[in-house]
Length: 415
Image (cartoon, rainbow, N blue to C red; front, side, top):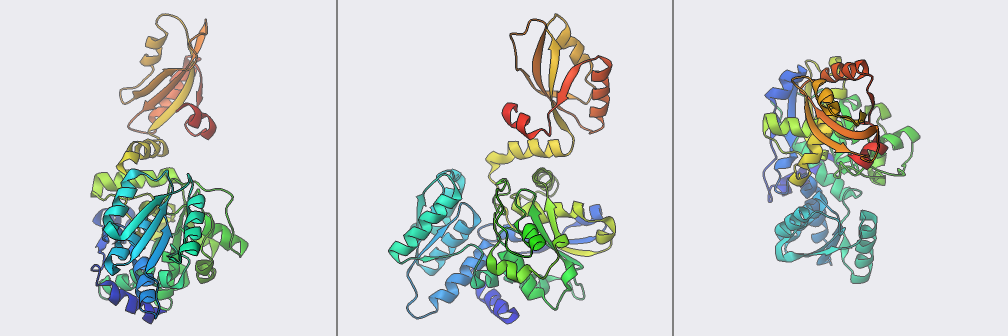
């Protein structure tokens, strides 16, 4: 496959130059390593998905009797890559998206495809949208372009690895390569290209905690369909890894899959935006976040490549991302407090707060109680240890309270 991927990489230059392999001074100093970021967020569609779509179209259009109409189902990066390539080749494409797709993503897809694509909004969930796209393909004769489970798509995604090899400084070989995993097309293509260049133990596969389809499949020794997924990391929230991709990856150990909590990804998004000025989508932050899960001796002094898979971040999500980041970092907590209904009770409570504590939310949950009332209080601080002091003050005052920060049921109901 290596030669085929090299050919695909050469052809891809008709669309855009290689994305940068950027040495990160900041991350290298932080982890005591030499860390390079493969900046797929700087492709024309701000993700690597354009590679697989281009290679699929390039090869199918070179065949005799190739179709002139194509279709895909996607609410994100695959749709944008598909649209860009449709315009490049001058072919007609239909993009099926869920009705719930943010307008920003719809507008970007339309901008990339121009007059060559039609967007159809169908269903509230992706599965409904995908079935509609399949039905359209069968009835119209359009060819379905898969997002990841296809040999030509895998080959196209593998061009990321071809560029990395060419871009590394002379004599430098990575000790670790960290790749985000959704459907598995990127990791299948990259590992195929790097087979024989790097040992199998050099690879780490990064999945969100709410959608560990590769990890579950490697543990079972077969493709596993997850019962449910957390869609927060929308670029990697896949319930079932591709069949072809699993066959390519089944030689790796389940322990090489790093499962990353969604809230930890939020910390990375905020940190990279504030410190490096890099805008990352949740899936794009997966590989960087996974560095925290590695043992120090696996990182220190090593040369590491982390694939930043995309930067299509909807800034309307920023308040939620910041909120989740602060909670994960221990800088924000929510309490339900049983507060006495008497003059001065609120003043007494405020006196318990330290100089670095701030009330971010205050809401009575029960106003009709005669003697005590339940109050939802959100508190932000600048150091996690401040909450230990605050809880000690609550206990000393015999205050009845419950920390609901990590109680998903309660917090989803009242926060």
